[in-house]
Image (cartoon, rainbow, N blue to C red; front, side, top):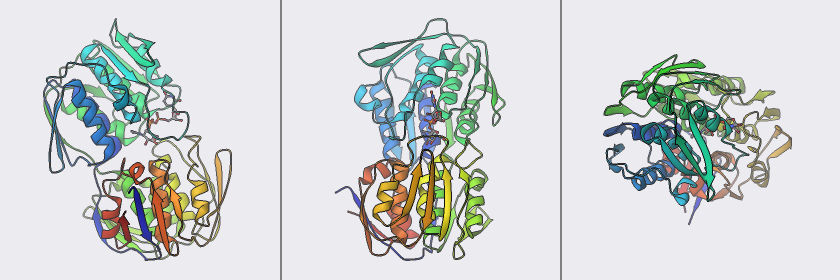
Length: 415
Ligand code: UD1
């Protein structure tokens, strides 16, 4: 079976360590292609998106091995540049292989990427950036083909920030001869971690953490060992789990410096927290205030990846809350499912109005990763039993949400 069953109404109280970050791990796995040797990723999350990327790398000729939560990638023998359609379509992040395959081999063939069904998700910015480095694109049999005919550094200016497109531009530019200047970059932590990783492996990137990166290309990368940073979205999900049950909870290794926007909202709702010796301690007994006028934004604003989970929390907070989604137009897909649990939410274009009240257990269906996590969070507060179908969507990003929430005191199991 592919379900999660939750008996709601128990205030959480327990302690867990936050898993490694999905969105940091995937581009680092792609970046490993640029090193014709061994890359060791410590604390790598054992999630299906990481396994899918591992399969893609193996299909290209890489050797991979796990030692507990360490992933060892030997990319010395990679000899193919074509990502098989059935592998690449499984996950949108396969698109970051474009930059690294071009960087190493000067060519790449990929299916148009899959991933969460949360809107259009075009790749025009990825292509625009790499064209500036001399890459030519064409389509063959529905596959995206790229050739770096005159591969060289260049000037890239993004009209709007994109995490994946910035990562692709960086991966390409690290190998392209000459200097590249990228303006309008995404400043999400996952871009920063990729740049740090590349510099540790011999890349020459300046301006890390700003919206303008300067890269001296033609770097020969060498072997590297790096720890995957903790997952700010998984940590944020567990803050919301504490909030929705008006419970408590301790998160070890929570990346609080990357969680400012969420913790600000948590406090506005009435939550309290302290951060000491790497432990985020939560007290959600006072969560009772609605949130009016929240917008999802690029980092350091409120992350779109936590919008659905917050929606679940606000469905239990008396009064009217309002959330505007500004990043992905289709991210309210979870609303009809939350309504089955009694949530009072109306959506008009990109804004959701939430009138909080009691939730009731129901049979609901996850349609994508973060919406699925939101249904689990709602189930923690709902009266009676909630059954969330399509657990596999949630497993794309959460190592074991049932294990973590059980450790935090929830009554939850896989079925
Ligand atoms: C990444 C994250 C995802 C997160 C998102 C926004 C990974 C694996 N995924 O996705 O969890 O929700 O950042 O923080 O790290 N856009 C274009 N053209 C493009 C590319 C993007 O118009 O070529 C638009 C998108 O439709 C969206 C916005 O730009 O509206 C931001 O998307 P982007 O930052 O690229 O998200 P991803 O990298 O796909």
